[in-house]
Amino acid sequence: MLEARCHCGRVSIIVPRRPRLLTACNCSLCGRIQPLFAYYKAASVEVRSTADGLDSYAWGHRVLRWYRCGYCGCFTYHEPAQRRPDGTSRIGVNLALVTDSDHLTGVAVNLRDGAADTWEVIDRFRFGILPGQ
Ligand SMILES: [Zn+2]
Image (tube, rainbow, N blue to C red; front, side):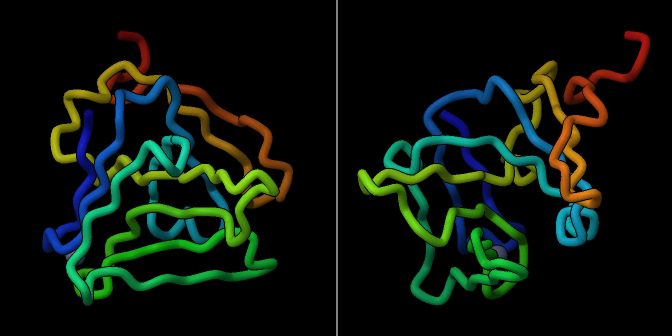
């Protein structure tokens, strides 16, 4: 179990396990806020928030809704605007906000090319490990 928490602590996200993979992206939004997403079934993720905690944002084709703390502004997770036909959904939790980043050391990070709109993996590295180590 890992916890990601916004800066002021109004929003926290509990995920069931260490991720196998993190996703970084260079799209116009991620390039600005530098999240590291790990994906989980929505039903396995617990979102805790004060009543005034969550705000959301959608852009472009609005396929994703991005949730951020309405007070300190940290982006905490995103979720498809529409669930699948079977009612399930997959949440991208921003583990750049993890409370103890030691839990992520060595996890593979794929950098995807959102800027070119291809979403191809253009770089791979490991969290917390410098090149050559
Ligand atoms: Zn906050």
